[in-house]
Structure formats: C-alpha cells, structure tokens
Image 1 (tube, helix red, strand yellow):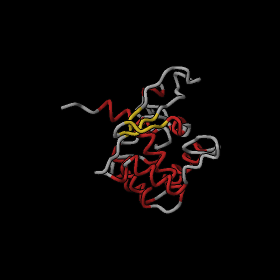
Image 2 (spheres, rainbow, N blue to C red; image 1 turned 90 degrees about the horizontal axis):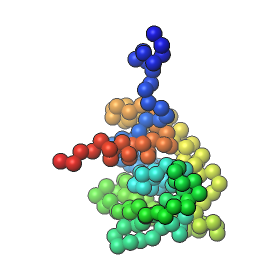
Image 3 (cartoon, helix red, strand yellow; image 1 turned 90 degrees about the vertical axis):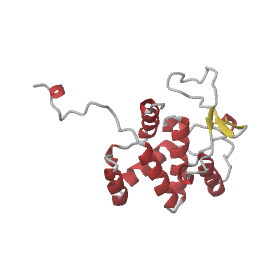
Amino acid sequence: KGASETKDVKVSSGKDPLSFEGYKMLGNFSLKQTGTEWIFFRTMLIICWNLICRANNGIKILYNHMEFFEDALKIYIIHQKNDQEGDRPRDGKHIYANPLNPDICPLLALGIYWCCFGMNDNGHGKLFPGNNQFDRFSKIITRFRNNENLKDAFKFLGIDIQNIGSHSVRKGTVHGLVSTRIQ
C-alpha cells in the first residue's frame, strides 16, 4: 500500500486551526502573564482573530489604516495574498468591543497595548513597530507550546498544542465561521 492509503498519513497540511475555546484560553493565559511580550502577543492574537487575517498581515497594520466608525474600530487590510501590491480598493473590517469577555476584547487589548507601548510609531506609522514582529509572534507561540499547564488544558479540549502555529489563528476563525450553523 502507498502512504496515502494508510491511516497514519495526515490529510491536512500545515498547522491545525485554533478553536474558539483555544483562542479564549490563550487570551486568558496571556492576560495573566507578566511582561510586555505577552501584551504584544495577546493584542496580535486578538486583532488577527477579529480581522480574520494572517499574522504577517496583522503586523503590517498602520495607524492610517484605522478609524473609528460609529461603535466600531474599522481597520483596512491593505496587503492581501491575492493583491500583493495593495492596489485594489478595500472595505474596512469592523472590530467591536466585547465587554462580556474581557479576555478577548479587542478594544481592551489595544488599550492595554497602548498604555504599555504608547502610540509612538517612530515615524513609521505602524501599529506594531519593529522589524521582526512576525518572528516575535511565532517565538511566543513556540514558548507557550512548551508550557505544561497549557499543554494539559489544550489536551482537555482535544487539541494538540504542538500543532498550533501563527497561521492557526486565521484557520480557526475561518473554520469556526464556516462550520457555524444559523439556527
């Protein structure tokens, strides 16, 4: 039999999607950690989840891509996989506060982020200034994969934490939206 005919072959590619429960758990866990790395991580996690965007697009958000519109924060994702140059017109994606679950509230995450880092972009206009923010985000994911408490909690949810990566956030959001049924 060929490799594709055995049940030991993984059918999907890349990292697994992050479930909503896993997302909430990471939001809660990172909120309880000390240090600015966790504040950066939590903000990136929540912004990428709410925008349904890849982490490498989340780190490219500029302040002039953001505006408040009525009761929402509107963010424009300029660079997309199917438009590398960002030439196509964009509709902003709306992000709303989540006062019922502060662990994953995007506006609270941004508020804490700005309190700790300020809104100083060093003239670059970046929400997440720096040269290696994607690597920074990925390294924090690697660190939490080695946390025994998180390993056990994710195992309880039926998730292998070793299969969670930076793209798991977007995959999880899309998976959750597609699999949700309107009742």
